[in-house]
Image (tube, rainbow, N blue to C red):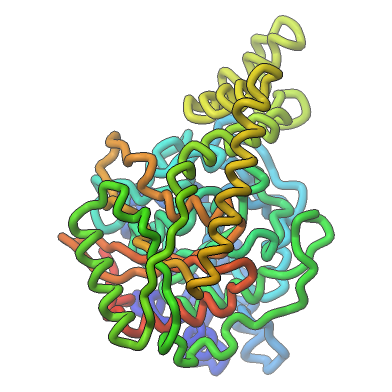
Length: 482
């Protein structure tokens, strides 16, 4: 049954609906694959095998009876460990939330339950989503399925690895500065971040609120579009969630879209050190797009050079504000060693939070201080507006911005990626724009991808363009590392 986990979810749904494949067999295949390979990869923090099998049996009975079934009836999915599921643990890969039980469902979970999806387990991540390698998790390091000595990317590395190794047909993650699209590129799958406000963040542990978005991992673009159709939409509980009506993102996705499409390549791409194999296969991708009728134009966004600094200042400031609620009093880890209230706060955080989280809290507190607010935080927000305006101007010359997914290939554990590695991914979060990573090639046994970024709420067209590229990329999406 391994091959059933590498086909399109669209096809899997059809096979289940007509009785050709049973949900319980698909779910059991997930757990069999997990038991076979996850000892090496360590993508999952928690499995829900017993409950998932029971739910799959109920789905099969419902299908067999001829009752009306939901769109994802009996389809398994993996969930990043910072998304609440009522009555289930949620740790955000931190010791602080080790014993935390979610008191309600996140909006995306509500919608998935209504659609009939089955949650197979919680995936590993960087602690509180702070990191780009899934090495800062308090519990384990997740490996890249294509080379277990290398990182899968982060912070949603567990979700990316679970789909890449065919342990799950698809998964949810969160994207604050490329945290879905970067690991998708490193692991050879599709990774999508929506326009800011398209998908509700209610019930998701916040990192940096003006950047955070729920994202999707899948083997195929059309599956990512299907999952987005289900979880997107208005939600009064998230104040930045736009009141958009239902959109079917799979509709007309197969329509020819590359002919006369204008793709902008930033001239700033030449300003950074790029791995030779990334340059080679990006040029190959450009040639394939041109051969299919796309027009390549050069665009100029000078503010790209500020992206790493902007992200660091604004993100850490928002981290400082969001993590302020983790005081050891209302919920989470509470130190037994506190002598007074302030000491209780300090020890609860000091004993339960990792180095990366503490570092970001401290820097965020610094830039929000009275002496630094205008010099650092306020100035960063002004330059962020400059970046947004320059990006909007660039879309007057092109339909989508096209870049490599990352400028470097994944490194071994303990090694660092340069801060500009994800610069074109992070720019999408700073501007609130949708982006999608699509795999394009293998180099020395490792996958790599390209990235399309659209104007705000161009998500439907973005899926169409990504699907069109997927067809011409010649990347084998059924190939798995195990």
